[in-house]
Image (tube, rainbow, N blue to C red; front, side, top):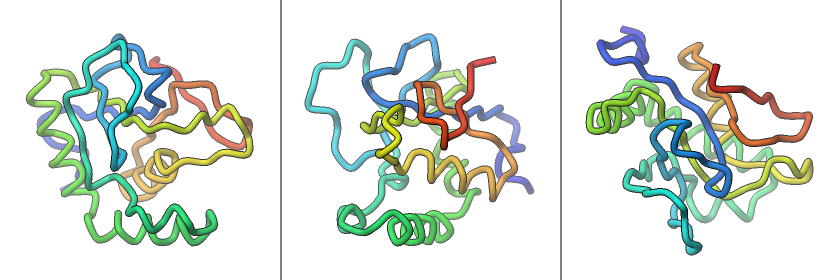
Length: 144
């Protein structure tokens, strides 16, 4: 069975902590650590399985991507979807916004949230749109 074709609708977005707005959906932390700055919204959900391992951050982008995608492959889209559906069911909202720190409007920066988005698209066929401003080399989405 297709991992995103269960009874519950599952719509994923990505954003950064500082740009998230509650009207976008349910905020979900996918970083090892929580923000140390005050957020203007409640952040009750975290999926640590989607956070890259600490040692990956010292690697160049291509190595980071390969290692992180290997971890995602090991988890598999069905297990990821199951974990995310727990949040959907708890919140009664199918729109989950996966959050991390990087400002992707800066073309020099990259982030695991977009690596996850590409992996999710590759494994499920479902798009994960970015909701904050991003540089031209990323694909940006909207809520509609």
